[in-house]
Length: 282
Image: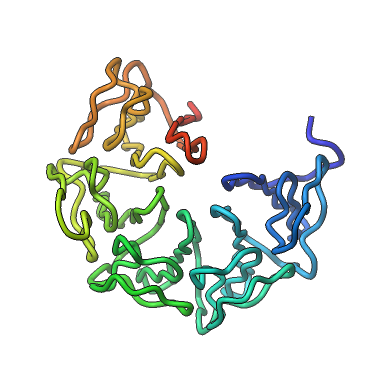
C-alpha cells in the first residue's frame, strides 16, 4: 500500500514519478518529484504545493499536469521545451498556470509535451514539437498552447513517446507526431525527413472506440472498443501489442484474450524502449 493515501479518485504515472488525486482535490506525488531541483526524490507521497480543486491529473517525462474544476490547467517540473506552457522555459518547483487555457476537461502528456481537451471539443498542445507532436502543422516548440489542427468533437486525449492521440465522439481515434515505427496507426511508416505527421491522421479501421492510451517510451497506441476488446498499434519489440508476436504493426491489431475491458493505461521504461499496458475488465 502506498503510504498515507486515502480517498484517492485518480492516479497517473510519469517517467520517474507517480501521482494521485484525492477526493478533496489535492494532488500527491512520489518518486522523482519533478520539481526542477536536484535530489528531489521521495519514497512516500508528498503534496503538490498550492493545488486545490483538481479534477484530473497527468504525468509527463519530468513534469506533472493538473486540471482544476474551473477549467484551468497547471503544470510543474522541468521546462526545457516549454512543457509547462506558461510562456517560458524556466523550471518551476511549484505549479504554474498553463497560459490561456480555459474550459479544459481532460489532460494528457507525452515525453515533453502537454495536451488538453476543451469543452468545445478542440485539442490543444504545448512543449516539444520536433516530431510534430503539437499537431499544428509545424515542428517548432511552443511554450504556450497551440490548437491541434482540424480536430473537433474530441472527448479524450493521450500522449505516447512523441505522438499525440485523440478520441472523438464518433468513436474514431486520431494521431499526430512521430511515425518511424507506425505509431500513427494509419498503415504507413514515415522513413525520411521528419518521420512524422505534424497534423492529425485517422488511426485506420478503428470504430466504436471508448478510451485511448499511449505508451510512454515504446511508441505504441491503444484503444478500447465498445465491445470490450482492446486494440494496439506501433512498437512491439517487447510484445507491447499483446497479440502473441513481437512484430511492429502500422495498423491496429487485437490484443489477444481480452474482453470486457473498460479502461486502458500504458507505460514504458525510459531509454530502454520497453513498453507495457494494463487493462481493467468489467
